Image (cartoon, rainbow, N blue to C red; front, side, top):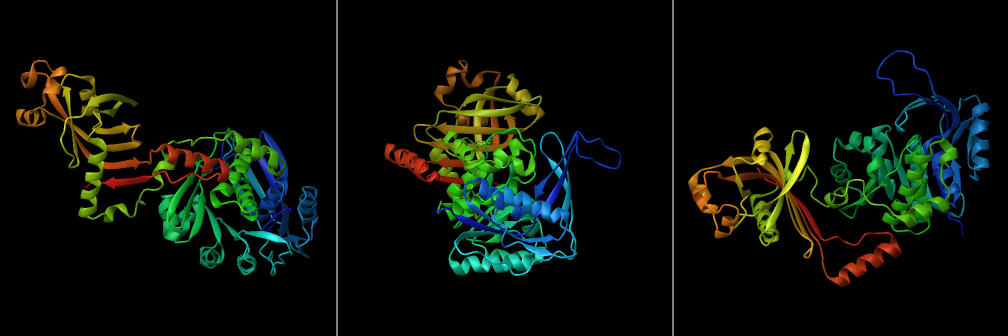
Length: 479
């Protein structure tokens, strides 16, 4: 049975101009290309549902004009059910001007008739999910309440809108998904994870463009990375994401599996450009899912399970001491660490022998005072230090401020006979010194390691599209 997704909200005619660069001020600009295509959050989502093999239903208002008739015909040709559409006599259908530069970034200007309003939507029988945008808050609220009453998913495209309307819409939606800008505007949080926590919804997400998306599910953050693509035009990608996500939920997919389907569809749309004509079919999305992809930033998926930025300053002394003990337990048996410094604008890493018997927030490494790394530290004291134990699946990353220490007492306190390998003259070597790293922040990953756990994780990923619990991951800050 084909899953029906009723998309409630706006439809727009997009007049797209391709230009060399987005304007930074006044002046004249020559377009490299021009096209007209359909747009609007809900209408684009409905077309994405239809292209991906679902029953896309659009319920929204149109003016009784040439533009309105053209948009409806475009949706009909795309296989969208426009039966619930509302035609308003004497009202202009929305039109937007879109400026797009070569890397896909765009600027959008919308003309919307203030008389364009939407009556209570009719959700057709057999609808398996509702997707609503915030352009017509009362109609969207009614649609989300209808979804809740029917026991089906209610996805909210939480884009930038009247902030006063969002709390009621969020309360009615089962799966709100924000844009980065909307989440920041609503919560005041620059960090997406912190923003989702502040919203306080049981299952909410935020799209992050080329970084993918982030979901907070029952208090736990999950990153869904995006594939690497050459974006031609990002207009409508978020709308495609919401439509595909709603379709996945309508089909009974777990949240993160639905998010991966949505990610593939949105990436293909960005790569193709071409407005509504660039929305991919299901075969293309499934092929991308089958090929798979890795995170653009490999650490992104690992960092999201850490405490949010607004939680770190409140860490108690006892918790910080526990964290230090945990870090030391993971580092103590690792004989070498990688020290990363800034070498005239280039990051440079080299192995360093560990030289301590405990961890109190400071790291110590023996070095030659004449070495190049000491000169690098003198120019920029910021360093990174990593410890890795692949066999035990333990990884620690620390960052802090490095300084050179040459006093004899400190050298004697950290000396061991193993150090003589690098300093045959012992503690009296005139070039011997210590590099002291005052750690400011640390992060660790303590993953399960048994073959059974890894086999289970592989099977879970293949069957459900969801990652298994990766183990403990935490950030620690030091005063």
